[in-house]
Length: 218
Image (tube, rainbow, N blue to C red; front, side, top):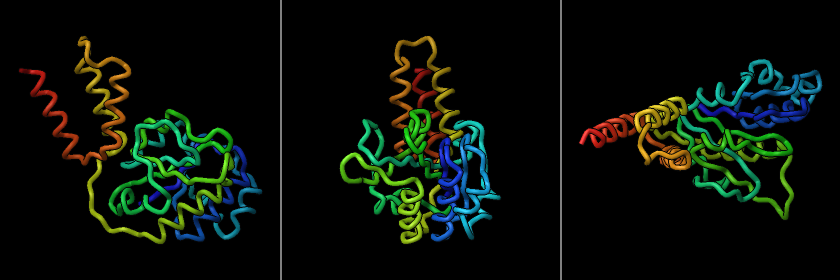
């Protein structure tokens, strides 16, 4: 199941236009993080997709939202210095979207893009290149991604670990390694990046617990 997530959208018309873009491509699950008020303008722009707005999940914080998903994919129009796999809009469905995982595709603030807090929890980034320094309107970017999802429906059966499980592992690791000189703050962030972009399954994450515990005892 794939959810379109908007981080801190500031204009109700944009939210409505996103809902319409989703509706035309057969997607219906929308999540909003700290959005502006969903006014009548949003419903006017959504047209037949008003039901998507009515059923949208609204979260007060990024943490509350992201822990609902197994896979998080960020979107960007520019090349950012990230230690994450970067896929084109054309290629990402084959690599990242699987039917039995809760996948969230996150679009950032209309002006500032995705926050670092969100990007730090993503497993990959979709890049939509544009000419010069221009960027697509939010709903247009969503339309591109939804079209590629609809065109490349995949049936892989992978059991990815969830965002909450990966964050729980990092908390355990920080606590487990407390008092050593190894797990400095920047090291912890590098490990988080490695864990995220590796797309570990639930069983592989359990193996990481066992390996670290066993090595520490020797």
